[in-house]
Image 1: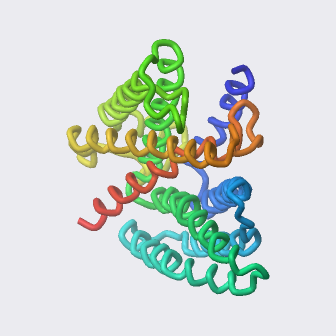
Image 2 (image 1 turned 180 degrees about the horizontal axis):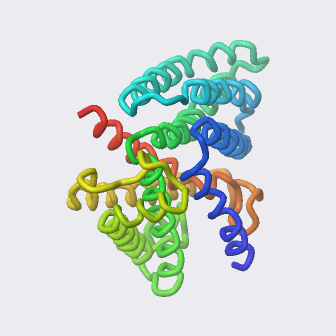
Length: 298
């Protein structure tokens, strides 16, 4: 627990500074590094399933994807940046199966070619695309505020699920997949996330003004005055984000359980690997990004 808290104390300010203040190209580079580390952990997990993954081709394809985000990150309007990202993401998602299946033709044992290609395709769509969505979300109207909202909602849900589940949890959700997760913890997670979401949007202008005043955001990255959305849709969005985050956590538990390991790695003391830390975000990020994309296209 001490390691867990110490790691969080060090990392949380760094993550918040990057999300709120770092230029978008810098954020894209950091997201690329996180995605590559996470994909490395995921591909190592697939070896426990008897798959010999395509390491360097997967890293190269992922690197090229994020390189397009770095190069394309400019002063575009939210609508233009969303359109460019949609084209980039759609093209990458469409060709990634063909890239790795073509690479599989060079495998000595053809029986391993398809599983290796499938692992690489899944690694890209499961990890790289959501991380790319986080980068593009920053380019949206009030992007920094929404990223902060996403992180706080996911973190609050995770913290309350952990402590409430351990203290009063009695009814297990999926003992075969995640033996310690309980319905009590899940309910506490949902309540905590909704509470944080309600507080964020109830005091959106004050929060944005405070962040603007200390120089952590630009004005376009905050939520002010008439830009504030109605509370009802935001509560529904927060519920959707929490459900997605909890599903993301369970999906990673499924992968680890099948691989016979407790953590995806040991990169972060007290927290396990990078995949252990961002598993919830990988499912929640697309939900928020699609909301933001729909909003900007209205």
